[in-house]
Amino acid sequence: DLCLYFFCFFYDTATTEIYTLSLHDALPICLLVPSDIGGHHRFRRMTQWLKERFPQPIISGGIYATFFDDFCLKEPYVDYFVVGEAEYAFPELLTVLEAGESPENLQGICGHYLGKAFVNEMALPVEDLDTLPIPDRALYYKYPFIKNFRLKRFATGRGCMNSCSYCWNPL
Image 1 (cartoon, rainbow, N blue to C red):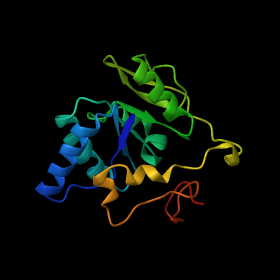
Image 2: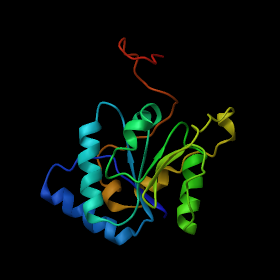
Image 3: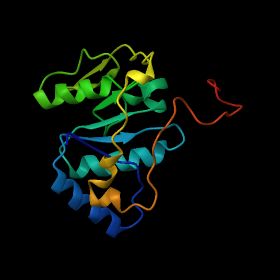
């Protein structure tokens, strides 16, 4: 497996130790942490915790990365951000990282490579969603530290699920 996905907040020492042991056992080439606007402080704590303990690149994406790529480049603990749709950009980034190549010219990717910041054009949305493979939900049961969560999240739609009146991009 190329990547481990983190979407949690470490509540106690026991939970933190479980994640630390699981990560060392899994040996991923990168760590994926989603980013949203409302959870920015939790996001910063989580990415700092991961960066202090693991050498793998940290990748993020989501609404925060898509709309605020200039702020994302100032995030000290994240190496790469996926901006826009990730269905093709993210697997392409994983392929490049696994090969040890530069991600500097990948559409939909921004970040830092060899100490230099780069921003690329946003990834375009997939026009026909029926061309995408069905997500492999079995991955949620492969790792004990995810399998044992009482609640598992599956995204089954596009865009934001909220209709906030104050948002600049309401549905």
